[in-house]
Length: 118
Image 1 (cartoon, rainbow, N blue to C red):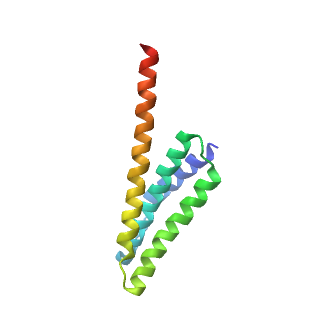
Image 2: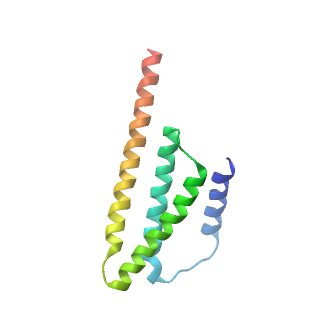
Image 3: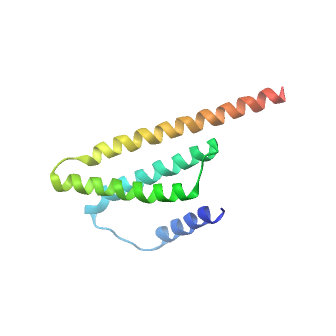
């Protein structure tokens, strides 16, 4: 189970250190794909706190969500509809929901710990 965070760390360092330049045309797609990836990461943290985390579901969700978000933005560009904004709003809302649930869980655990100490 320790291999997944280590793999992410290695890939992150490789992406940071390799001189990769993408055309400006892909900036919107990459931004939306990163937003979808963040949504999956925070969903994985939430699932881990709830005891429902499965690495196969996390990895498949990360890949599928990232590519689907980028594809929707591309499809929107093809048909002339700004699907980029719709996907960004939905993914942003999901990120805020997951963060609020993570925060609520940690605050609940902290208050329970303080009650036991008293």
